[in-house]
Length: 304
Image 1 (tube, helix red, strand yellow):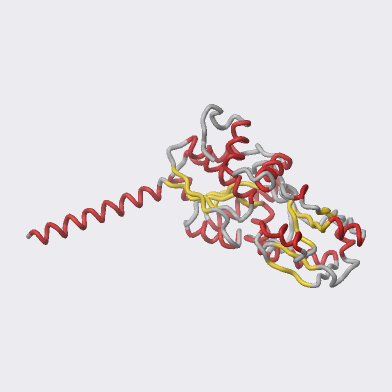
Image 2: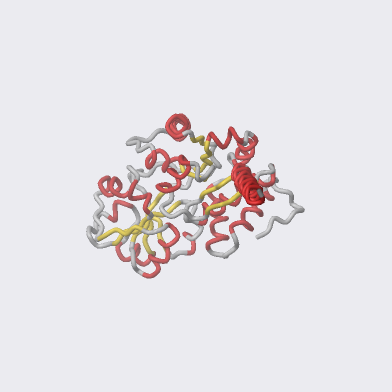
């Protein structure tokens, strides 16, 4: 009898622990970010707004390797609830579209197809456009008189190109760029976003794709080349969230909408600079910005 009661009590205890774990999981919003400072800052901004305006807890998975290619299937599976994504990446990498639309029309189509195919919702964009370009060292730009993408084509098989995994996968990425401009590189390397500048500095690569909001750019001894034939599309950033998560936490959508249109290209670049160059923490920079915008209590400390 004692053994029976002991087993019953043990089973009840395990059940309560499991139930508590399930409730904890339901009340925790899991945010994913790609391995770059901009995403780290945006992840902190989203977490701060959620915790400031609800009773929900937030867990950030920082710097998921492989970026979109690994985050998207994890979102569909339910491992993550939301993450910051770029319209051009969603359109080209996930939906694998061959042609581009004007930004407003493209966003509307993204919303429809993501909802229908994946049960995911795009919340309206933050405001900034983190578009692609190409950059070379100032010395190389001067030596070879490089000013435009077309100028690179004049020197086939001379330069080594470096970019993150996503850039090699998107329809209008590396392969299409090379075909469009008739570019021929000596070789190309796949690396995480945050490692490209160090690789440029060490001479491991000669040409990189860059983003227009990149904080490291102004202090990296690099020359940004002009996209003289207008190849690259727009990359507006917005939150993607699971529709199932919104059903469980209907208050969440209104909170996420607080990010709508609050960031210009320059403001995003300035925050990236503070993290990448001044070595301030992502959370500190996010708190400072949100307080400036009146979205956090200026009297409270939110940690570093």
